[in-house]
Image 1 (spheres, rainbow, N blue to C red):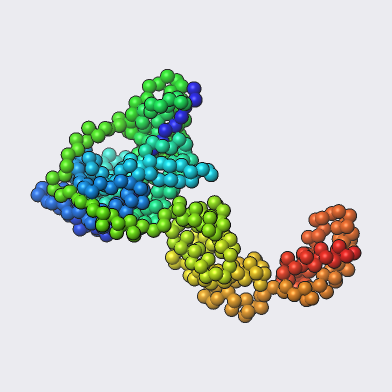
Image 2 (image 1 turned 180 degrees about the vertical axis):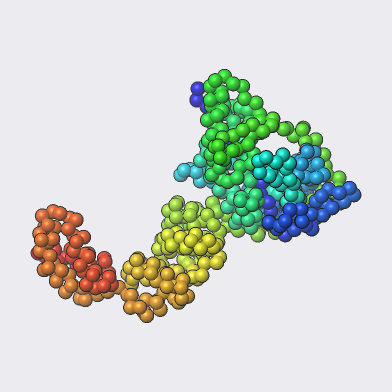
Length: 479
């Protein structure tokens, strides 16, 4: 029987604040265990939480970026659940009056547009971290440094139907978080976590199947693998007559499979009630307008604008807008007005990105100013130097910090484009290569390339290849 996959996701992003959500403890990563704690995040009796305003504004910014409705009043709840790494045995979260709800995210997927609904965006405190020693030791350790860190949760609607769609969703959402500056999204540090939910139903059926949630997935690629595996596993189970029930599973990346963890909890299991130690928060239109004004142009609209205004292809625009700083660098280079957007895009995608990856630096730290990269692109685009020479000049720019025009002048790298300076060399090469000329006349078109090399060697690679080709074609046609 053919089945349709129904896929949704819960996304947890630690917010970029210096202190925790309800106390002044540091959120810095990598400190010795249990050194960034206080009575508030340790849940000592009698302590009172105080909300971090910046964390709330970060969450509000994401809610607006995801087109959510923001109620004028929101508040926090207590989520009662045993967390071995959250010492007060409840979590301050939101449920009854979430910060944002009924939003959506439009994203391109395989040449089409997909709208994924956003059920809600809410703010909560993160739990600590359990440390499991090597095999042979039965005890686990608890590090509470992370407990209380501001955590943004984004819950999507089950609007995705294929692994490629949740892949696009995760990448688009990660880019929004990075563009808005609310999180650094370092998955290797646990600052961004995706928990997909998958169910299968017979093709054409409206009712959903049993929802299976996957916890503790460490990367975007691992989420895609987990979703692919779960679709296959559920298909086999349903085909064999097994009745699936809602559950939470873990992803074992080493074995490439999911394993059962526990039955799926419902909202009733958490016994939510309003957090008595925090007041409600009123979000008026003035506050929303100020936060909305701080939103940058987001990745998908920016990608479409680059395609429409600068005539870039979907691939080029996608690569350039994948990183806000890289897109800013590209647009600054185009604004210099020295080279075409296409030429600048090629240099950024093929060379700037390569250097960034080799040096493990961000576009902000790239040492060549955008206008100088544009000047280099213009030298190649106008034929002053060739592409290989351009890459050599780029290396010199990185080493010396000099502008490309100065390097070309000092080293005498400019191409020879004057036909009168090249035609005599072309004539000598044709005279010295009668067999090659005969082969070309006999229809062996590959022989033409054997004539280009000698001309380039005589000019020490400085002849403009396009001019060489034109003159060779002209002289061959005259013979």
